[in-house]
Length: 289
Image (cartoon, rainbow, N blue to C red):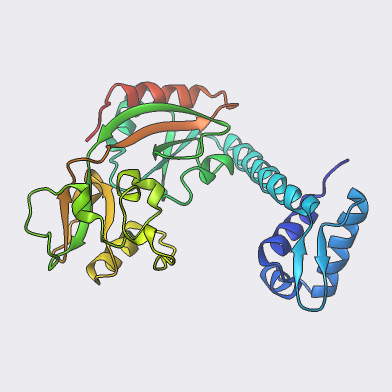
């Protein structure tokens, strides 16, 4: 069947909100119109996607599967649109994503020396979107920090760098030249424990019934604000800590945790001479620090 991308967008909004009223407001359409579009999609697929009553809206197993696939389809469609629009420009364009703390300028200069006809655009990414920007076409290639979901991507290592723990200036460990991970066992970590497996394996808070809530953090600036306020600690790459230096937060080397691995990533199915050119420029400079 031919999928109607508009109906898929409507479906994803309802599936994420699990409320037709909120989804309609998010889409800026009337709720009855949204309901009709969802019923039409269910008729086309010949299966219900939601179980609805007066109080709740719940995805069926078919709806859960469609949500997974619809996100990929919509991202692919958006990526096609972006690439076609870029290809129509008079000058070739390469868009490069990069994570905080990583300096891209040296590689851009090398690329400019080899391909002065190419216009390079840069997009700062975060832990939450460094992979999404590849799938939705926002960037052609990205400098990422592992771990990431590598499905559908080609990933090439660039370099490794140490990680430090960020603590408030008045913290009990703030005066130390370095710490071991065991000294952090009773601290509250402001990130996914899987990002720091050495801490996760000994953390006292993970052995209690309820771990204190970790708010969604979308930027390094937000993370450091929380650390400075005494809300917890965070383990980040050394280059990021150096870039975001501030007097009320201290970075301390941690002796026994693994380094952060920095890689280049792009869609495995993409074939582009501009990507190849940037790979060459980046490889000539690695390791960066």
